[in-house]
Image (tube, rainbow, N blue to C red; front, top):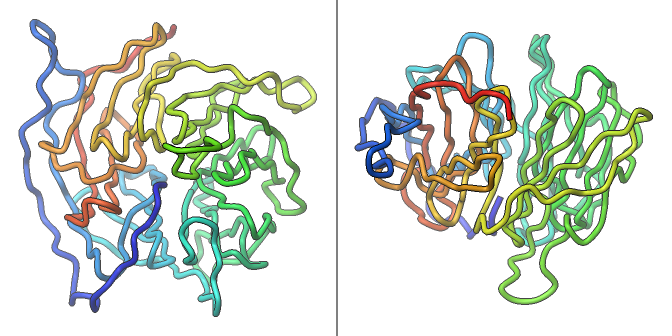
Length: 329
């Protein structure tokens, strides 16, 4: 999640929905593109705060998005029909570091349909919130430091824990899935924002659990990190798996191996980061990206929300086709 400029203007009447096909990003000479058939399925309302920050996928191919500025969780079908599922409670005097507004950021989905989201407010309401699949109001299940900015969120149901990446404090917080006190699971310079220009203040950002490790992106440092999970659940040494990823936000694993599809927010790209460190653009602004914030894959469909935080143009949800899954390695 990058620095969020102030929204101005009144909300427009409704979402502009529909399918717009864009020209796929060109592959390297002599190579077939990994991602094809890009199309924007939902054009969202910037003035209403519908800036999609993060995504979790449902079994039927629909998506749940967090709308950062609107403090909302929205459900979007593959056809682009959008329904707001919940709105987080307003905060009278938000003081969130860097953004100075109350924002909903990361989202994770449990197998039973329960959604967990990060809410950053600069107050005691900062923390992890839960939304039942049966509806009802969201409830806070864990408090996180008010002077932090919880951003990405990942769920490890096998261990029964949630991991929240704090962009300001350079910390990965660990919280019981059922709720309870947060523990500073991993900290250190690799997770922290840069201490001086060109620092933007965003350290640990995106986060995913991959088998025996937690993976984290650091936006300021342009790095992709792997943190092993020990047998007792403790964090091992932080490993840098890729760098020179300017503006990296959240990411996903498009196959069984360790290759990653990552959203480069400020570069308006989604790139494939292979295990050997090579980086290949697979989607660009020509496909419809406008400050992409995260990536998800299900059944060879690629989902990319764009928040238009700095472009100020066309926040949207883009779908594309993954030509093949990437193997182990």
